[in-house]
Length: 120
Image 1 (cartoon, rainbow, N blue to C red):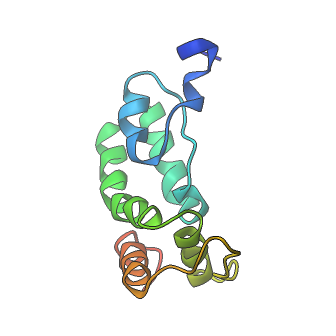
Image 2: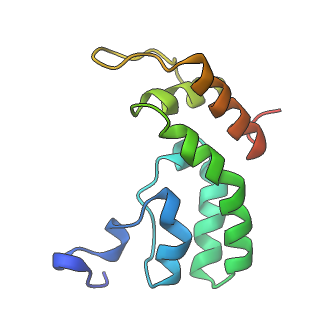
């Protein structure tokens, strides 16, 4: 492991929205939410950054940025569960104190998934 801040590995500090820039500065991974919905795209993006193909990594990031934003539009994990329900992987049901996301956020998630090529 590479040394990071306060003895942490740099891999532990990256997240979806900063993954390309983080890896470009020496990071080696990402703690990802969007990879639950788009594992292939996230893996391709990580591989591209680790091999120095930042053009490809940035192209993928442009495709998934709306999805990243939509998955955090309301309290997590509600938008994520909705996205996974669209893929048939789970129910969108949420336990209290969380609540189901609004119709506007559902539309945002669905549109972002279409943009990323995950849904028709």
